[in-house]
Image 1 (tube, rainbow, N blue to C red):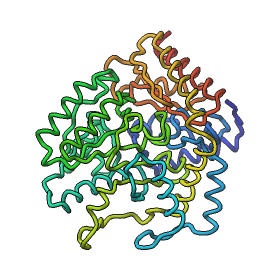
Image 2 (image 1 turned 180 degrees about the vertical axis):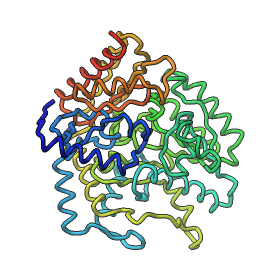
Image 3 (image 1 turned 180 degrees about the horizontal axis):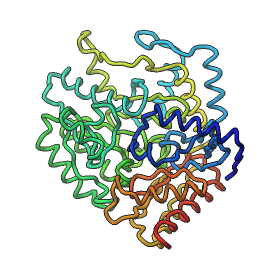
Image 4 (image 1 turned 90 degrees about the horizontal axis):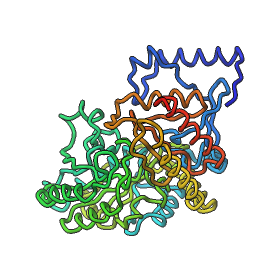
Amino acid sequence: MTTSGTGDAAARRAAIVRADKACVWHPYTPMQRYLDEVDPLVIDRAAGARLFDVDGRSYLDANSSWWVALLGHNHPRLVAALRAQAGKLCHTSLAGVTHEGAARLAEELVAVAPPGLEKVFFSDDGSTAVEVAIKLAVQLWFNEGRPARKRFVALDGAFHGETLGATSLGGVEVFRRPFAGVVLDCVHVPTPGGARGGDGHAAAFDALAEVVRRGADEIAAVVLEPRVQGAAGMLVYDAEYLRRTRALCDDHDVLLIIDEVFTGYGRTGPMWACEAAGARPDLLCTAKGFCGGVLPMAATLASRRVFDAFLGAPDRAFYYGHSFCGNPLGAAVAREVLAIYRDEDILARAAPKARRIADAFEALCDLPSVVRPRSIGMIGAVDLAATASYLGGAGWRVYEEARRRGAYLRPLGDTVYVAPPLTIPDADLEELLAIVRASIAAVVGA
């Protein structure tokens, strides 16, 4: 970690914080505490796995800046692709017209998608990718003459985004409670991770199966985060649950929506988390790593069965879209992301890093109060309380310790986790894991 300590830098920082606290409403932030107590990081630039603040300090980015920078920050090929496209075409509508970037991106995305997904609907971010899937599911059944099928099934602790439809699926109570009276009808079933990442997938599946069997005539879709529930506290569950859910949906003619916004693009190991289960979705949502953390863009991939339900008379069409659907800048960057994955063998090169994360988080259990170590791919997590809570403070004390040591380690309440870029250099990864251990030890009194 380096510092500049110049008077000019200090004055610049003070001016930024002053403007920020006067005008900015931050996401996922208790603003009274922020205004009264928080001295925020003021990020100036980023490169690779590191963020740099206006004072010149360096911080390892332990969560890929909310899980988006899977290839690290400012990958030179992505920056070059953005610059090249900006000189030619920044934007055009995709409503009844097309451009090469959107067409080629859709073609390339289908080529790497799970089998059976043949059509791509572009949108802006993970929430809207899920919103698209929800609306497609409801309208499919309407078009097919079964309008009663408009309920959804999701997991306790689920998180699928921030639009009102996506909020309906959410199972994190503090996120959903204020909107409970206006959201879509969604039945929540037990998480297959057990209470906090255990092996209770069999009992959880039985509960899901009972809900689907009893209510299939009213259910539009089952919606899952595959293999790991992120916002719930990085709850990891067995691939068998996904396999059995796919079969259950087939048996009762219910759609399966897989939300790969967090898990896709190699975060859990394979390109798509559902690949490990061979669970082919009817609709798949992708964002975050999709554009390498450069631009907000997303996609919802659909099966031929879903697409065909919208063909025919004009009133069967999907009348939905966003001004920036298929934006040429985003398409150029997203295509380059896929090229980098191919050319730089990203998934294979991440595998030994994932094993190192797993070993490091398992070893944290020798510290007091550290429980339930878990990992999958480039994710590692532990809880600092027997009953961990999103509103708990233990993780935030670790955050402060890690910040002093040179890491940005945003927790999920009492859950401390890492989800660094898949490309994090080995030396940076070792430094990050050492900071995680030292910061937790400082908090729990080891």
